[in-house]
Length: 95
Image (tube, rainbow, N blue to C red; front, top):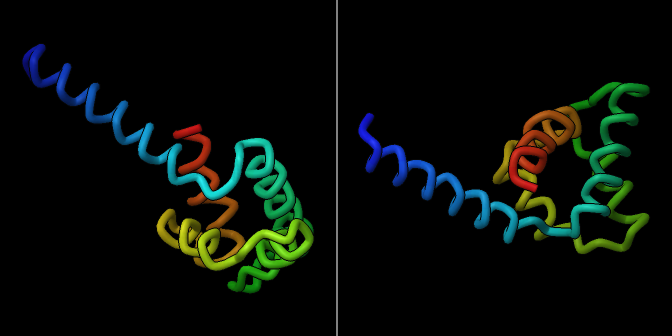
C-alpha cells in the first residue's frame, strides 16, 4: 500500500473512532461501571442468554433502556455475555 493510501486509511480509522465515541450512550465513567457490573455478574452467575444484568444495572441508575439497548445491539450485545465481550471490546477500542 502506498503512502497516500496509508494516510487515507489512517484518517478513516480516526474518523470512525470519533463517530464511535460520539455514539456512546453514557459518559465513560458510567460505562466503565456498567461493564464491570455485567462482567462480574456473568462471571459469578453465568449468562442465561438474556440481558438481565444489563437491565438490572440500567434500572438501578434510572437510565432509559431503549437507546442504550439499541447501542448494545449495534455493537453485538444481544445478551449479557455478548455485552461483556463484544460491546465492551467496542467501547475499549474507541474510548
